[in-house]
Image 1 (cartoon, rainbow, N blue to C red):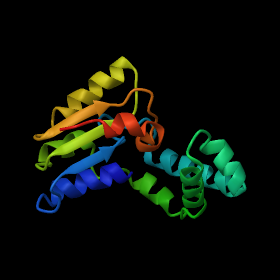
Image 2 (image 1 turned 90 degrees about the vertical axis):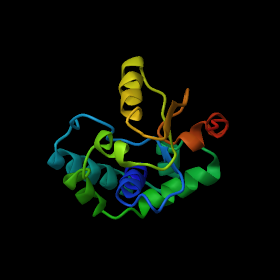
Image 3 (image 1 turned 30 degrees about the horizontal axis):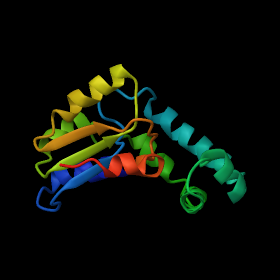
Image 4 (image 1 turned 180 degrees about the vertical axis):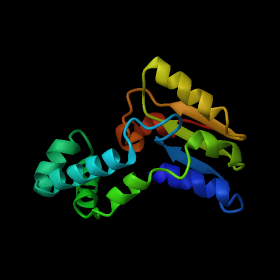
Length: 158
């Protein structure tokens, strides 16, 4: 939800950022598949599931293939995540990013995880709403783009 938070902040306070980089933002367009109650319940279940695992199990289950230092950081952050985060899921996003992007006036780079062709087309249509933006899908990248495909993401230039 970090990319969404950055996008909304850049739209509401255009004087703050000189430039914006969004890593795999969710909630780009359309109605979410789950309703607010379902989202909150899914988040709570995920947190309960993670709470029952040891740090080593969490790393092995959720962060296999990550750099060991990054995997440990993500696992610790997951373990320390407050159950109150489920309420963010219940509340939903203030607005979808396709409504926010036209208001972001600073230069913006959106790095998006790999996706099927239909999703890429929809994403690029939303990316066209950025007045000074570039939207790039990173091949073979998952949600953690800079961890999954750092070199590919790093080579994207303005």
